[in-house]
Image (cartoon, rainbow, N blue to C red; front, side, top):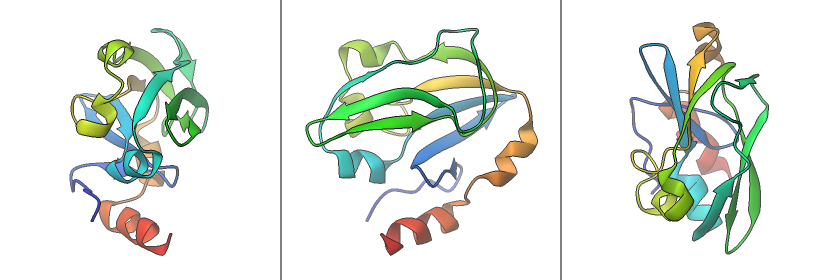
Length: 129
């Protein structure tokens, strides 16, 4: 069964969000990386300081099986991109909820978090698939 940490929020597109002091850390879920297979490239991320809107494409993940867009679950300003992924994209497979995070966004509207799925709702989503 896929790992679904209780402290996170989720999107229907299989991104996860963790918020600390108004900054959202975003990555792709265990389920997403499991479906993709071995990740070989992550990129096309916005630059630090760029603004993004909820639902914008903010990157791409390529694996041995597929290429998928990564969507921003929140609106705000990019404050950091995980540079460790440049040389080690496989961190998304081995550690999707910690070392394999993708970007950090300073939230423009914390109310958008209410639009995201709870762990229980996300579990139900992936069990339907």
